[in-house]
Structures are given as C-alpha cells and as structure tokens.
Amino acid sequence: MNVIWRTLLVILGARRRVRRGESLDPAAVGTIRLTTLPTDIDILRHMNNGRYLSLFDLGRWDLLIRTGLFDAMKARDWYAVVSNATITYRKSLQLWQRFDVQSRFIGHDDRAVFMEHRAVVDGEIYARVIVRARMLRRAGGAVSNEELFSAVGRPEGVPEIDEWVHEWASASALPPTRASAPSVWN
Image (cartoon, rainbow, N blue to C red; front, side, top):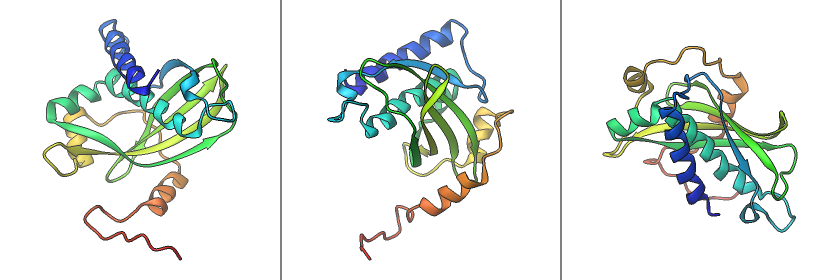
C-alpha cells in the first residue's frame, strides 16, 4: 500500500476520532497503530530506513488534526514544512510487525516548532526522529510563531527542548532559500 493511501486513511481516522471526542491537547502524545507492509521492506528484509520518515509523517497528520492545528492552518491558508530532521534507529521493524507511531510537540524556537516521533513496539522504542517544522503561507512567506500562537494559542505543558536539539538545528541549517548555497565539496 502506497503511503498516499495510508495518509488518506490516517486523515479520515483522525477526523473520525475528533468527532468521537478524541481530540488531543497540544502537549499530549498522539498514537496511531501501523503494520510493516511488503512495500516498506528493503533488500535486507526489514523496514527501509527512508520509509520511517514517511510513516512518521502519518503521526504528524494525526497530531495536527486531533489538536485542531490543521483546521486553524487551513482556515488561514498556511501549511507546514519540515526544515530539519534527525533520526536514530535502534531496532529493525520486520515484515508484518505491528507498531505504534507516537507523536508529540516538544517545543519551539524563534522560527519553528519541534516534534518528536517514535516507532514503538510493546512499549519499547525502535526508532526516534526529531523534526523542526516551519509554517508557511500559500501566498508566500513564513508565519512567525507570534502569529501562529495568536491564532491557535500558546500551548501549555509542552516541555522545554533539550539544548542539544537547539544546537543540532543551528548546526544542520542550510542557508535561507534566497541566499546562495553552492554545492562545493572540500
């Protein structure tokens, strides 16, 4: 099953959960259950390393919809893009293995929000990604956090981001899109 079909199923499922009163507080952990499918497997017979990021996107959709952030973004013609991500793999997910994608907002800096996603089996972390995401306008330009928080409220109970996350985001940043970024290998 291609990830686009999974995305549609997650979006519909998240909408259904909201209608049933299963909305989430912005500081809560959202969870969806997935299964490793044949299309997720690489030649080594475990989940392909790149597929994790695609499946963690599903957790992000669920979290955005169930916290109400997606509807607020849609009403203002905003959308989110991942600007940085770092992933750590601990154990391999095997074919047909059931696992949970747990997702949570973990804070923000002056320009972006941070989320953490985990692949979890029986309470044990198999992989974890930290994502830094920016809000953009469809008409062009970035949405400041002040504007974001004035529209949706500043979430209470979101933990402070570990200092290493700020250092990673700064150290891994590329130049802004309007600046030159030549590909020169040293």
